[in-house]
Amino acid sequence: MTTTDTFISIPVRIDFDSATPGYSRAMSVLDEAATAELDRVGFDARLRELVRLRASQLNGCAYCVDQHSRAAVAVGDTHQRVHAVAVWKESGFFTARERAALAFTESVTRLADTHVPDEVVDEARAVFSDDEVGALLAAIVTINAWNAIAVATRAWRPRRDRD
Image (cartoon, rainbow, N blue to C red; front, side, top):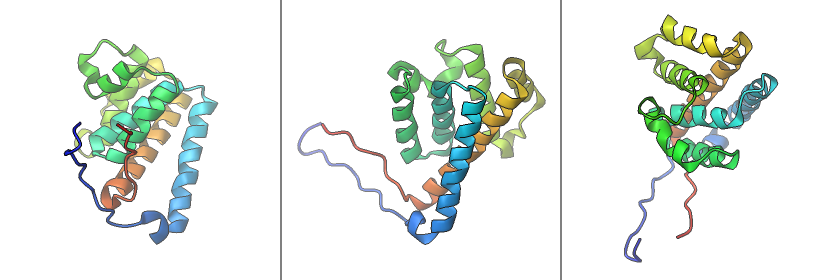
């Protein structure tokens, strides 16, 4: 990047945390509960972040894509897999469990179009226990709610790395 390159500033539409402090706190509690359910069933932290990342990509949430791609690397995933999650179907970098979780994530995130078909649920249930699928669903619903808030309000900004 040269010194003449400048970043574009994306303005905040609504300061969500200030405008709805009780709801914002409730979303944080919901997020903590979803994460606790994933932890309770021993769900892999790397896959947790890839699920959150994939839903955020589908929803176009710049803040959450930045946050969860960084978090995936922080919990031990590779940059290569983080970059490839957008094309996971075409990539050989993901296990059967991960592929089932990502397929379930995509279907739930796009539920207005997919209606979450039986075969997607069956694929998830073939490699995860019912408790794991439930915890995964809780995480997907929660990240989709965060994405809706972030995209609608632009309340939070991706972190810029220093050059």
